[in-house]
Image 1 (cartoon, rainbow, N blue to C red):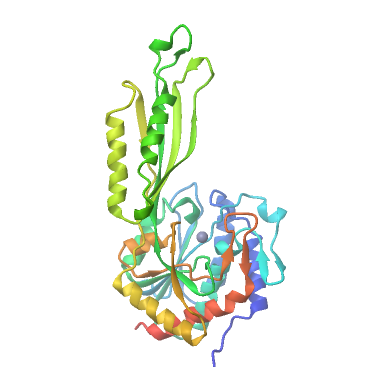
Image 2 (cartoon, rainbow, N blue to C red):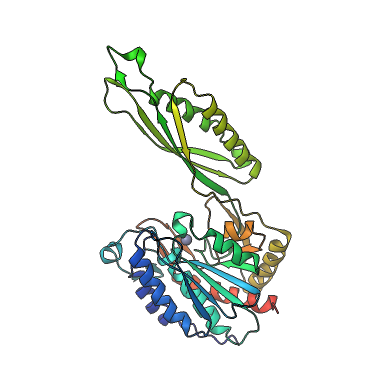
Length: 374
Ligand SMILES: [Zn+2]
């Protein structure tokens, strides 16, 4: 039983090629090279491939659909970019040591991209309409592609995100939402000696904001607010004219998001030091991924399949966001982190556990057969 086209040595050979192509999110040529490579691979499956260019600062995305004019049964999500800059692959190329494979993006998520390909190769004759969305800048939070992903999700019965697996027996159905703010404070410079009273100290205003923002952290609610970067001032003897903070916030409850936004608006309206100007910029945020009833039903099926394989499947909650946040928020049942298991992602210690490739692959394949989406 279980005939498969996935031969581990071929998988690893293909993975080596992908990992050794640098594709940091801002490396447009690198990401496009990976896209071209995958285009060729996926072309053999007989789907329709569309390139999507959303912005000149990022590479192209790929939409590969079995039948682009039909509603989608299963939407597979993957991203081609990594967090590593150009030249990383030359410094530490793909290598295997025991059960671990190393290299930039090996687990997050170049192995997952190949897994999608092999799944579809094995399921060529299956009677369902699939679509693969390969994002070029997920690691940036998908600011130019999230509309596209949400629209695809609205047309799909289920989204499977083949992101890095966290452990052999775990899948993610819940993720925090989150976003960031860049806040700039503009005061008035003056000499710290002779003109002190005439100045407006932007650092002082910033310090007040940091305290107020950090008070919004609420572990019971799963809300965190973190000022991760703060800078300001020009010299010790000058009243600081400029200061700036970068704030990361995460939440499960949309009400908590509203609370944070309300607080920012209040602080802006009533600065601690009258006269200081405040500019707030906010890239698009991710809403939380909350499992729907349907998601949980799908998850139960995964658990049953896992049981038969001797795995005790459980869900894991992630504080980090993924493109799954967008598809879940669009109302599409979403199962995330379905790829082979990896660890230490976003660092030079990142690795992939080779012996998780086959079991995780088989589990998704059986799941797809089981839900037998018509
Ligand atoms: Zn990823």
